[in-house]
Length: 142
Figure 1 (cartoon, rainbow, N blue to C red):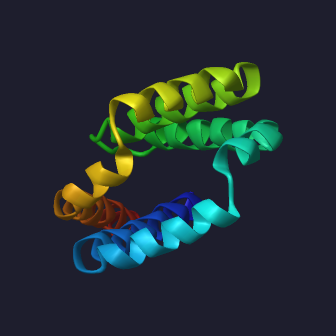
Figure 2: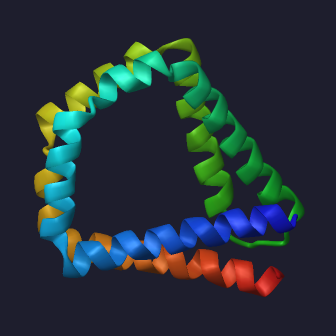
């Protein structure tokens, strides 16, 4: 149980860092993303490593669902994220092209870079709130 809380705490800290960066240093995030896009092609990486990533996603799904079932948390968030992670993991293992088709279709409809930059403060605040929830969960059970 202790390891689960530590993982939640670490994810909360990472969320807080990204939230602060989105609010106060969005240009830094864009510069890093541009360099990462040049060095690192996500689609091919997902396809090459789809089995380990899918297994990890299923593990995350199981972890979140198990945490929801044994800890008296009134938040259904754990269960919903667990279900989404499970669906994503299954798609990676069984039908990775479905994810790529959906991603390309979404990119035609909506440019995510513009969305994140225009809504950076709201997204940053949402990340900070999520981080606060995770850290509060860690502190209340440790």
